[in-house]
Image 1 (cartoon, rainbow, N blue to C red):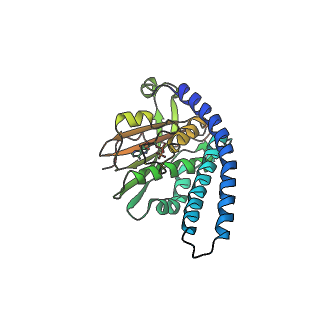
Image 2 (cartoon, protein in one colour):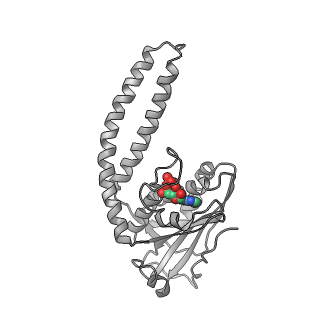
Image 3 (cartoon, helix red, strand yellow):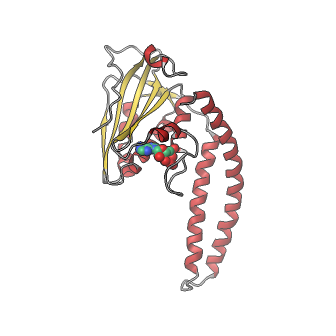
Length: 261
Ligand code: ADP
């Protein structure tokens, strides 16, 4: 909440730093993985030490996958915005989401009617929704409900006055809500910070929400977290309505900032 400018400067600095480190790290990992592979090949299948070589290899491969993600993040691939029907996009993701969420989490899609179109990079929007869904799943270790809701929303003067940097106007809303553990205010405050994570080492990179933030900001949108410990979390993404679209009759107002029960 300390201002969009500070956040984007931080993102840029971290992007440069991360890119450099990830690149060097990747080269070193290639040596580690190559050497481990040689070592393993030289060992007979029944040598007990082989197990150690294999678990080292596994860890090195995980590290390589992580640096790939860091590189993709640092590169900040240029967005390829195009008109998007968010309802269609979300509906097309339901199989993928169900697989990512597992059997314990119920997925519910609440698609708003007469939804406006937005202009965004569809791949990055999918990516953002997957990031939010994975966070929601992690917040519901004993299962729960994940609701993805879409709707038309108008952010009026009253709203923008208390949210500097947000332009007044029409937006397409995508809200991803869970009834998981929730976050205390001091976590909400830092949740968009790159590398901020409360997850165990190796479980989280702390980049998911900063990626979401970067994507939404670059798309001219707005993102907010509503969360209550013990009750759940709702992340709302507002993407600008595509200009030039014919106005549909009586757009519903902004969806209330309610959490699923
Ligand atoms: P990561 O998931 O790798 O930790 P993120 O940037 O995606 O990184 O999230 C940062 C932190 O925000 C998480 O570690 C967690 O503490 C908190 N968080 C994010 N989403 C949720 C959620 N749906 N419920 C509870 N806490 C969350």
